[in-house]
Length: 290
Image (cartoon, rainbow, N blue to C red; front, side, top):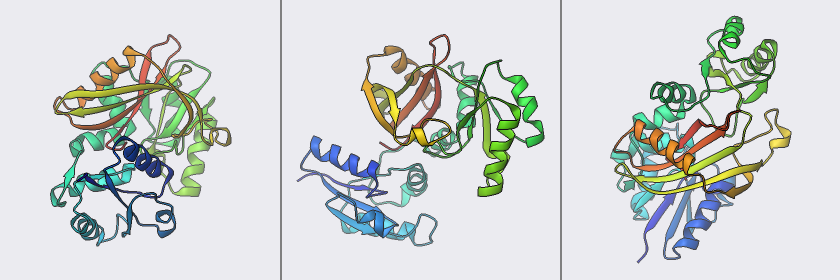
């Protein structure tokens, strides 16, 4: 009898792709999906699906446990940053396995500024990054960055390149951050400014168990879904990529993950980009989700 898996955010493109990949690798798997949006859930390709409350709802934990118990789930796989945080918080209350790193590792990786500062302190290659504290002080941040045609402006927390764009001037950065504050209620302190990396973009997907690297795959991003419609020109979803053999990417990714936790377990997706000298610098680490 095959293992029974529960995948969150069922019905999204990412989750349907995960279901397809898992069943192609092991047809004996029985996959259950769950989502809080009935319209998204309708598109799920899982064997069985459950509508559950939002993560912020008081009944979320109880409903998740009910699905796990009713379906005799062996492993729950969260498939968004928000799901990773929620499942990690509940891991000791769930009657099944959870293959996630420690909450401290998750929290550090989900805050891009905290991660960059941590890795910089460990002498690992990251773009020089400063947090924005006040719109009036953005010019001071610009002066601390290396002289270059562009500066990268983005949010500390979030996915899908939300709020990310290159800027040329202090006024562009101030206007961009002001727009998000006025229209979306996102304060300036949610943003960072960092040196812009002009080179090739890569990802290193890797699987870890008790501090041992089990599997690593590296690929280069060639184009992005919806990139042309964004000021940044990129998104977090790759439209076209090619597998590459780049031991340097695996090496720096492994050193970064071991710095986070020498006994780490879980799934990590390290994003890297070459600087002007061709040195791969870590821009973010997506943790806990395939």
